[in-house]
Length: 305
Image (cartoon, rainbow, N blue to C red; front, side, top):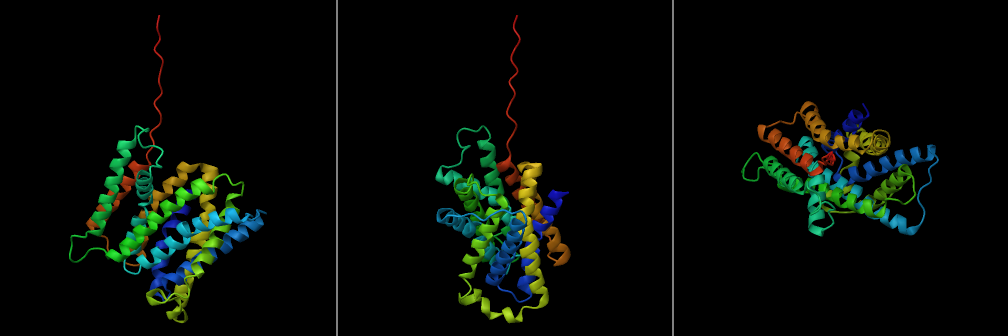
């Protein structure tokens, strides 16, 4: 039940972003409000749990890096990408994060399984399969009917940014001694501050160009996005890991594209094509192979006389 609720909250985020964009909010506004509202929720939860925010400049600098790559940058890229890409496709492209994690690990030589794990060929197959699915969805060979290239690249950039963030967080934030809820609250607070720096930006992302024209639907959408799909989702994810283990939490990743695609079709009327459905299946198959870890073989000793 918790897995389903978490998948619904997390996967519906793409829907709320799309609605907020359609009702007068800009990508920068969505990013700032999402981070600020999510931080407010986590700060309240941390306060109620009597968890203190981390102290020390060194830890906050590491948190700032995590906040940039895990929150501020991907939040902005996702909102920018969804200006021209449907919410369902956005969810599928976000699901490529494990593929980017493996690719970055191979490029930097930091992937722990390379050359030592018997599943390496399987994971490499998954990597190729996953990106083949992305190509099938984007259909760059089609002159019409394909996915917007700038929007798709922004969404893929968001997925890659999450991969960079996870690698950094595993090295820099693990074992700090700070409670996870307080650490998450601090990270989203830093993300809100970093996002606010972009508020005076000009050009197509100028946040002051249409805030006064944002209607109640847009403001309600970004409120749900920040409170439920960001703040509560962070909290539920940690609770799920603590109570049911990382395997259940990882399973949510396979449900996100399904949730985003179904909601996009039902609520926004986004058209599902055979190519998009096939591409989604190929991407998920690739992600499964990349994340798959078979159980170690049990060696049964032979009985001898």
